Picture 1 (spheres, one colour):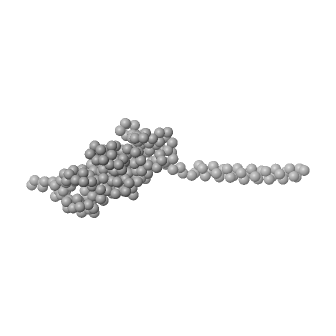
Picture 2: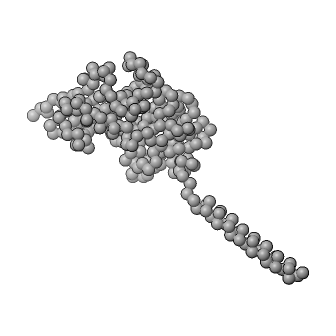
Length: 258
């Protein structure tokens, strides 16, 4: 009987040891598996910007955009842009992987009236600004275009007949000064203030500008040239209503005095 009891005790001890090892391995896996940044929110290095104009809430009051900044010393500040639902249960990082070159300044944000699209207006330097477009999925937003919305708008402009007036090489854009893309005011009322009658949350109107600063022989440039981006089809157009405005956007600088 004693031998039987000892045998059972040995078998029980082996089972307990195997179970303990299994549980320890599972615990180690949980501890060492990295957690996605979007699941936890900004890290302790990033501090919330609390000014009223640094926080944006969607028209349906369900989504809030917050801006956080980390001091990188001589390099400057690095910003992260997070969205949260009203219960702060679904944090999501909008600008994953961006460095100071793209996210070195705070940004402005605008929601479409139906709260399904979000535009980020991002300063990248003195007189330089780019645009990013995000689309909503549940309580989170993700990038809606393969590259910044402003780059797509510039591609459209340089491929249009209007660009021929500038006598500039489309492939030489990096040499342009103060390249600036902005939103035309009116997205909140579907641009009814411009006298337009567009479907709800269908279009985003973009303003493009650059100048001839620093050029030895200044050539024509544009200030506040408009185009519309169709959120349904992903295409650009210049509505007839913009013709008069855009005709005034072309500037021919005067020659420098000798």
